[in-house]
Amino acid sequence: MGKTKGHIRVAIIDSGVRKEHPLFAGEDISGFQITEKGIEEEFSDTYGHGTAIYAILSAAKLPVDILNVKLEGIEEGADEELLCRALEYIADNITVDIINLSLGLNVVNNLPRLYSVCKCLHDKDVLLISAFDNAGSYSYPALFDCVIGVTTGELCANKGDFEYFEDEAVNIGAMGGVQKLAWCSPDYIINGGNSFACAHVTVQCVKYMLEGLHTRQEILEQFRRAAKRVFQVNKVRKQGGIKIKKAILFPFNKEMHSLIRFSHLLDFELTDVYDVKYSGLVGSDTAHLLKDDRVLKKKIRCIDEIEWDSFDTLVLGHIDTLAGRTGKAGFRSEIINKMLEHHKQIYSFDELCEEELPKDSVFRAMVDWPEVRMEDVPANPQGKLYRIGKPVLGVFGTSSKQGKFTLQLTLRERLERRGICIGQIGTEPSALLYGMDAVYPMGYNGSVHITDTDAVRYLNFKMHQLCEKECQLILVGSQSGTVP
Image (cartoon, rainbow, N blue to C red; front, side, top):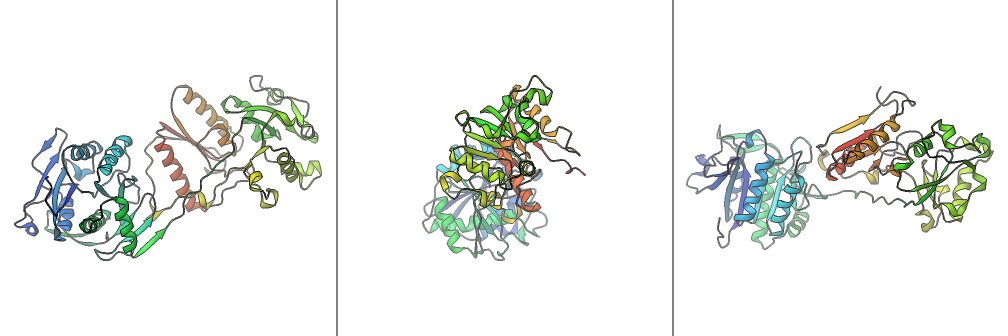
């Protein structure tokens, strides 16, 4: 499609057009079809969806040249391969200003390929506008940062109504409610959906381009100024975490056993293990106590006799039961203060209260523990969730003595030994120490401070991040009692 002076060039990738529709009498409609065999001239619509999208753009009576690109078999849903071919063909052979994609894929097998062609078009100053899935799932290519992602706006009752989302994924809300649409058979139907909201956004983008705006950022900013409502969303908190080279463990309780058994999976050195003199463990060693000569053998030492030059970090386990043994109500605070006095980092399995934390920001940065707060939960415009496109293996149980976490670590070790890329979410506070991708600390003394509904959003987002990591398998576990 060549450049026509004063016209905006729009490509619609959809199900083609019913050219004989009475609404299009006298119109010169152009297009072609992408099939498994290649390019075909015939692009007649036998479904109706593409006809509806074309009609919305045509009815605006704007100076546009519209090219209809039909995807073979789209009536059964968009095919990833054909969609990529269509975008690649346009990128290589056709000059357009806008591509309307009133379609999407919930799961993409070759995400880099689809993103690459979208980014290529974006870099050529082509504006890509795509609808999100109607069922509430995030979908591609609408999710990409080089595409304008469109959903149905709650406040959008008219064609010129728009909502703006300050979000990296969902950008614009438009009229996607029930409306009269041109169709194949019958001539008109009453229907709604994000697809048609996407077409209304494309019409407005044409208007903005005719006014001299061109880039995605310029057009989004104009939508923001014209929006009926701007939805501000929270930014996901950037979680840092301390870097450990040499660590000591205290105390030697159940949660520390796995760190000894699987010390070879840690990317730091365990130099010593400590406990209180009242524990009855001081003087013994880890191999003897665990009844396993294959594990890391370390003598249990008294916490009052720390060798300060041997470590940079204290891994502080659950010590609430030790207060009674030591007779010190502020036992944990005492340990924390002593560590910071010697400039040692602390990774605590328990959440530390404000009174226990140092006021100095430098020292505060030396203390870390696993937790989930609202700042960690991503924005959720219109209740959207991600479809997880990777296989998920879950380890669950009904009691606390079944070795669920041990099994997860064993699976992690054996699968990685076979060269399988693992994405993993743990519920034990030590999960991050093994290099797991995320932790949801819901067990003993749990530090999860979000509602059940927010938990779905958080875990869904974390699993989506693992899919983007290109892992081959997602491994998850849970705490006892969650099955019943």
